[in-house]
Image 1: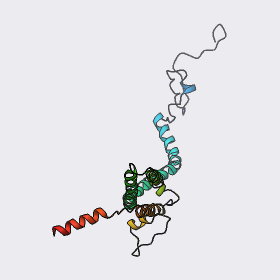
Image 2: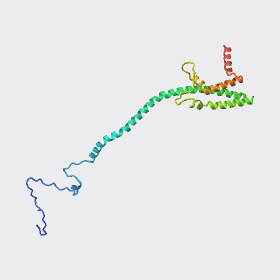
Image 3: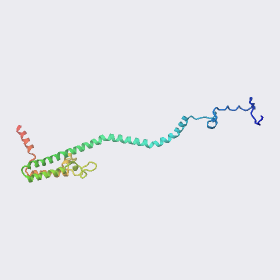
Length: 217
């Protein structure tokens, strides 16, 4: 004990009792005992913590991702089926629609052409007949428009005609379907009636052509 009553450890070598291990040397960082781990304690690197977390989360992520993967597979299957069937059914629909439309166009062209001929024939000869044929042509042009012929009144949502068709064979041809369209048939009869009244022979040109061929023979 010194003069101030302070008890200080001796400065010489420390004597240890038998069976006691020497104390752990002090660390250089005085805060290491508070915030750090003891030297003998196991430590985990940051990458190890992330790996453990990813292993714990991965099964949950896979399960939550299944609906989106299923939707993607369904979408791919739908697109593939649509692509494979488009070529077949679109082509069939186009062929059928084209054939019917072509035959309707031929009949409409014949009717409107005949009416235009009547208009031109009576224009400078008879004003009353000129006005009659002119009005008939204007009305026919409206009623025989393709949007009228193939509207919902005559064609259903599947593209099948609603009017009755009588064919020479078991299956009617597109020509017969077009000729028996109610509006086409209506105007064909009107043209024939006008031609009969005015003594117009629509077969005159064909007859003249046949006579010319017979003469050459």
